[in-house]
Image (cartoon, rainbow, N blue to C red; front, side):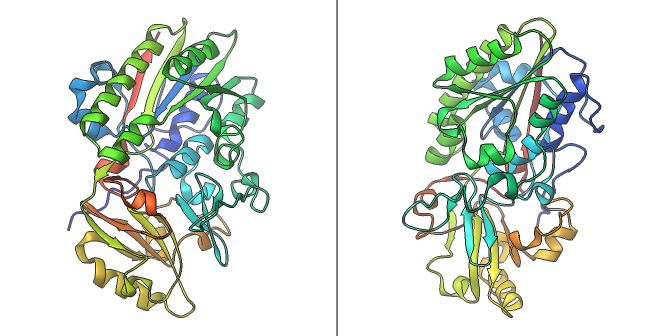
Length: 380
């Protein structure tokens, strides 16, 4: 059995990217292995779903990106999914510290929250939880953007309009000004405008569509490849218009795999037995057991999934560093049993997650394909 790719927290993970950019902008952030030369302005473009292995395999579709200096690969953390990765990026902390520990994770004794939408998970009607579980309390650490703004750096976030004021934005990416982008050209123009201002500038831009194509059609599919070509043009456009004394840094929040072996945790009686709550996503599950059932749940999930997943108790996952050092009062957000899918396997939920369960492209686990992302650098 191959070993999981454990995140390299504190050295070469996604959490080190923004602190490295602050150091390049002259702030005394803690040192790491990521070193970016001093600049006046920095633009960080995050391409959702841009994994190192995928970019290498399809370099001919992205000649500009493939030709850039790669200071990576970086590990993204566990689970290797968007909400967790954006929280690590935005706070400069591993998941065990910032507490966004799954695409869905436990927030009370009997509730699981969807971290992307900040709504109750697995219910028919979307229930907004921003008042009951304020994002600034669920993730209380100051973000890197807040620290940068306090130091006098002009901070700008450029992303989709629907993310303004969202729970995840408030939890992980708060600080600075928000500018909505409605298309690729708008994203490029507003990022360039942001770093062209006087003085020290830090701009974060986000693009989601490569991940969408991977989920819908599979990573490496024709629609995915054609979208990668658009991403390549986007990056080239921004790089070509960078003002003097600035840098463009490009990374991803995870890679992706195509799945063809599934177990349905909503309909499999064995997987349901003894389970109180189930969080995470198809490639990474938090299994919360009923009182006294944790050992039986662990044994059952190991027996059912076999070599399709790493299935470990919470204490083992924490001790082995899957989440990084665990902050106080956060252990309850992690399942009594933690599951990381292997190969092309997935644990779907046809009832609680009907849409995502049908999709061929998934991510969240500890494979090379999901964990490694590039850190591409272009200087003006």
